[in-house]
Image 1 (tube, one colour):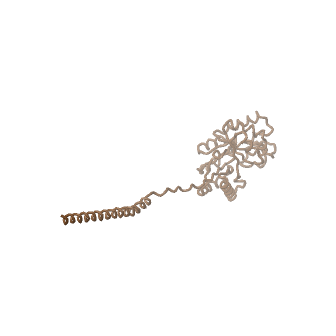
Image 2 (tube, rainbow, N blue to C red):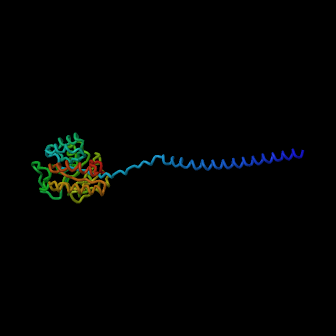
Image 3 (cartoon, rainbow, N blue to C red):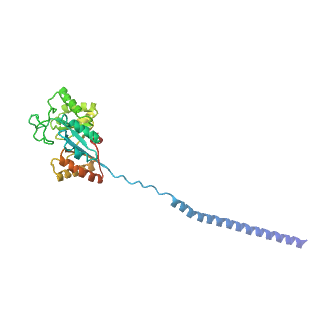
Length: 296
C-alpha cells in the first residue's frame, strides 16, 4: 500500500511539474507574440503616414498692378478711330461736348465696349478771352483760347448748370466727367461745388486732370462724390521715345501705389505707341482698366 501511495505522489508531482512548465511556456509565447506584433505594426503605421496625400500647395497670386489710360480731346474728327479699334484693352475716352463728331465718337465707344466720359471745358488761369470761331486741331490748347460754352468762375449757378446739362446730353453713355483745361475753375470751391453736386445727382464720377492747384479732391470727399486724379501726362511731346518713357513712369507709380492713371490725347503717334506698348505691359503683369474701376 505504501509503495502504491508513493507512486501516486510521484505521478502528481510529475503532473504539477508539467503544468508549471506548460504555464511558463505559455507566458513566454504570449509575451513573444506581443513584442512581434508591436514590431510588425511599426512599418504599417509608417506606410500609412507615407500614403497620406501631401498638402496642396497653393501658388501665391502675383500682384496685379492696374493702369487706366485716358485719351482726351475726342470730338473734332474721326481720323484716329481706325487705330483705336486695334486696342482691345480697356481705354477711357474723354469726349469734348457739342463738337462736330462728339456724338459719333460716343457711339463708336459703345460699339467698341470702351468707356466714355465728358471732357468738360472749364476756365484756365491764362486765356485770351476769345472764343474760337473754328475748331482747332486736337491738343492745341496752349494758345489760351477757350472752347465755346466754357464754364467760367464768374458764372452764376443757373448759367453754369445750363451749360453742364447741355454738355452731358451731347455725349450719351458717359460714366464720368473730366476737366478740359480748367486750372482756374478747379481752384474755385464755389464753382466746383455746383458742378460736383450735379454730377453726384446723376451718378457720375469726376476725374481731375490736375492742371494746377485744385480743391477737387477734398471737396469731392466732403460731398461724397466718386473721384480720382491723373498721375502722368503721356504725350506732352508727340514722340515715341518720350511717350514710352512716360508709360514707364506710369507703370512705376502703379507698382508703388497699386494703380495709376495716365492721360494722353487723340493723336496718331499716341495711339500708335499704345497699340504696340499695351501688350508688352500686360506681359509684365500690368492690368489695364477703366477709370470707373479706380474711382473712390
